[in-house]
Structures are given as structure tokens and as C-alpha cells.
Length: 242
Ligand code: 6PG
Image 1 (tube, rainbow, N blue to C red):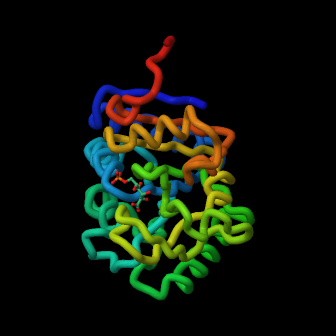
Image 2: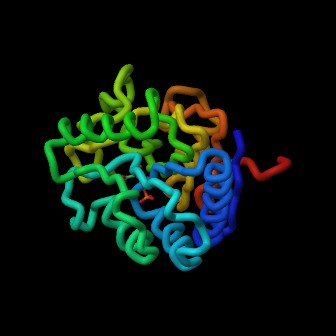
């Protein structure tokens, strides 16, 4: 289990951008392309802004395909849209070709939208779909993507993308989400959790130090899994060397 700690959210965002940069270069050198599933929520916004500030020439954006690990069932222009946040903080500032941007259609029927996304993902990334990088966040309840505690997607044995009914104050109550299943995340070449904030500290410590099978994020088991966390999120972890 590789955990990298950073003093504050801005240092975390810069480190996550640097890590993504290296992963892109490795994938493009090896296969001529890099498929990345972006995470949602608020934490990744600063990382996306850092990537945008570096300018289009900093990375081969014409060889990068953007996907999402989950989406809210809202329209693309809704303030809660994960795609919408990335559009404004990364995609528009860098002028990324819309043909390389594969959003989940949160405005459509979620079951149909999940099935359509799964088909597009499998066509592009194989069966099982192998993404080069999946970015993930963590909720205070230990959810990741939209794999919320007690939700059916946690035990989905077959599909790669599902419509998932969730009931959590962290999701705004009862709602439907579109989400990767753990199977898709675990099939990726690399997985990076990027976690900021003391509200995640208890869950993160429980995930990394506690018994298994308590938090949805513990379903994520990947050959190249790194946790990038700020000091607030890591505040319940033992200090290095202790
Ligand atoms: C979502 C995300 C979700 C998020 C965590 C952390 O759609 O909300 O995919 O898994 O990563 O809830 O959210 P914050 O970064 O806003 O704390």
C-alpha cells in the first residue's frame, strides 16, 4: 500500500498533476494513447486547474481520452455535474477536442445511460475495459466513485458501469448515480486516490489500517494503487517511521 502525504491541498494537487503527467507519458510512449477516468466531487478541481495552468503543450492532449468514473443524474450544465466541473476547469481552458471527451449522460435515463457508457467503454478499452489511469476520491463514509455503503453496485458481479440507487446525505439523500463498478477500477493499469480534508481522516485510517470489508473503497485492489493524501486527510494515520 503506497501512501504519499502532502502538507496541504495545493501541494496535493500539484503532486497529483505531476503523477498524472508521468503516467500519460508512459502510456503514450508504450501505446500511443492514454485513457484516464476522472474523479468527481470537489477535490480534483484544483488538480485540473493546475494541469490547465501548465498549458496545452505540457502534455499530448491529442493522445489522451477522458472518461469519468461516476456521474450524478443531472444535466451537463448543472452545478453538481462532474463533467461540468472538468469542462470548466480543464477541458475548455485546454481546448481539448470534444471527440476525446466521453462523458456519462446524467441527463438521460440512468439505466440506459450506464448501459450505453459501458458499451462505449468496452468498445474503446476492451473486455474487460482496461484504462491507463482511474482517479478516485474518497467520501467521509468511505465511498469512492459512486460506490456508496449498502448500494447494489458494491456487489455487481458482471457489469462495468451501472446505475446505482444511493441513499446518503453525502449524495443529497435518495438519488441515482452512474458509476464504474469495482471490477472496472481494478482492471485499470493504475489507480490513484487523491484525498483532501480532515473529514476523510477516520475513513482513510479505517481503510488503510482497519479490518477489511468495512468501507466501499476497500473493494479497490489494483496492482498499481497509490494513495495521494494531504496531511489533514492523513491526520489519523500513524506518522512515517512510528
Ligand atoms: C462524486 C465523486 C465522489 C467523490 C467523493 C469525495 O461524484 O461525488 O466521485 O466519490 O470523489 O465524494 O468528494 P470531495 O472531493 O468533494 O470531498
